[in-house]
Length: 66
Image (cartoon, rainbow, N blue to C red):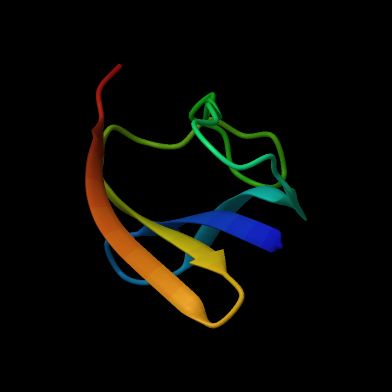
């Protein structure tokens, strides 16, 4: 299945789209370098990630510390 992983600011704005591809079943690792879609560094603070696979969505919180 196709999967998408996106990072949003605390205000709900899309910061970065990390993946939009098919992944193998099981454990996968993706790393966010703290940059937005334009390549600029973003500020430390809380961010929200959205993992979507088909019709299923999973949300979570994370903290970026510099």
